[in-house]
Length: 74
Image 1 (tube, rainbow, N blue to C red):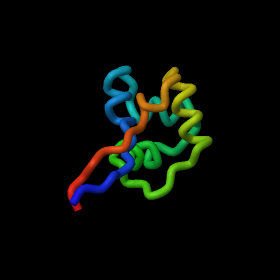
Image 2 (cartoon, one colour):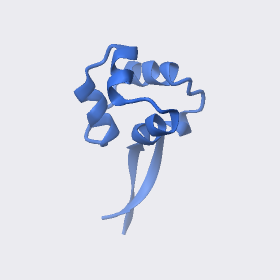
Image 3 (cartoon, rainbow, N blue to C red):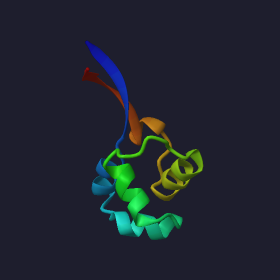
Image 4 (cartoon, rainbow, N blue to C red):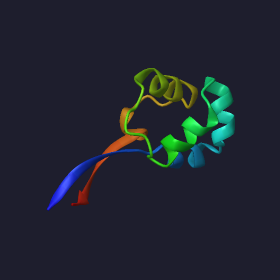
């Protein structure tokens, strides 16, 4: 049986834009371990103001560039 899982695509976006986790951390004043957890999808809660800061810093206008739902096997 399949279920839907939320996934941030932050790691892909950073690679595409040539920005390191450390640089993003400095750009938005968020701790680098927090960025790392988000890149690895190791967070169970996502803070909307942080997502807004990331989107603004990376000039993301379409939310689907940063996140998606994917089907996974249970």
